Image: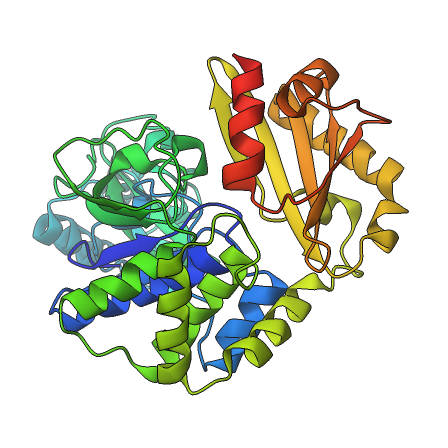
Length: 426
């Protein structure tokens, strides 16, 4: 990926708003003449996949890290043919100025000739020995560290000065110098639908955040330079982005309108969530007209697509739409699934709590929560693991039974779950 391409991404464990807003904002940037590309931090869930398929999109490329890789700093140097003789080898060395000589057969990596082994071969030849020795035969006697192009530069074990061959699946790609440094120009990134450090794709310190569009609380975002920030207390990032199109007098393509509509429907649970604002409803109505769909009919189709979690394992359930939050030195995870009927899921409560505990321990969380939200009844069963019963009681003012609590008129993690829990943790 060229550093001139700005990457637009949502949060880890992406939901519909996270992916659709990234696509919509990257498109807005493109319409304004900026080279931007939407990416995502994980696999799209069922609901998001339904929206993408409905409006003719493929899932954006998945990124799990912004770390500089060996492939970003390798030098493209042609290897010498395995059948080359000593004269050709010496000519290659003089032409390139390199002492470590990569040997190839076509594009296949054979090995490396080190200075010592080349000198030994030349000495033998001067003494009348092995006059017809080839590059491939010399390389077979040499051991050299081979580097993967996907290796993080920060993890590169620079055992000696000089260069190392870069090889992937047996194919020679070039050489990387032991003193290779990251490019001076960092990858530029725009964050949408999140701003908390624990929700950002890993190794963001090796990239440069230049913009942030969000509708959540401010969670300690730190940047190298001043950046453009647009936060609003609305129900969905796509509400903000759709209004940016209109404010900038930019036409919204039909399929992009469909994605932003899907995001608003998802985040506001078809306007049932307390996070929903008149601005969300207005944007959704306008977007539905542009997309050419009936808002209520399409909305229920989308929510039903996401509500089918019957084929998900307990481990997958507890990681669904999971986000991390911190209070002081303590970190928690809160996942959420939205269903039309909670009966089948609650019948699995004991095994889900076990999966939550495994998740909690493996990540060092003080507590792990899962919201099981009933779309039709507009309520949530909150189940959890960890020694946090007192925190839950304090947060919601209710008794806890078997690591669970029932919360009426509760659908929003952002507005109804996170604030009381973080407040109780202080």
